[in-house]
Image (cartoon, rainbow, N blue to C red):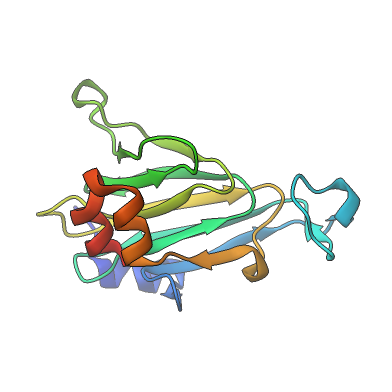
Length: 167
């Protein structure tokens, strides 16, 4: 039996993710800290070694276009396919399809390198998807930056429609 979005929210204690969209619950935050000198990006603050979350999308939500300083690994768990848009600073954008239909080109995992604009949504017609993300160094809100619709659509005109939907 397929779970509904409300059942997944209740069972995994998910909460709305302010600023980005979707629903999430942090499942791991390492107790070890990396000093600023050990980070792969400039920072005046330490970061946790690693963090992990559950992340859920519904037809009414999406992951707003944003970028992070560190790498983020997406893990697909269940539900309908998810479109993950990546817009790198030095190349064309691309859409990755997260899901379990490997023969159709879907993949259960995707890596978004630090500094790459990213956003995701259910593939049109989908009703729910449960994902997870892992970051090392760990996620910190100080490393999150919201995308600007006009600037990104201008820089990546081939993806203007999806950028519009994700901003």
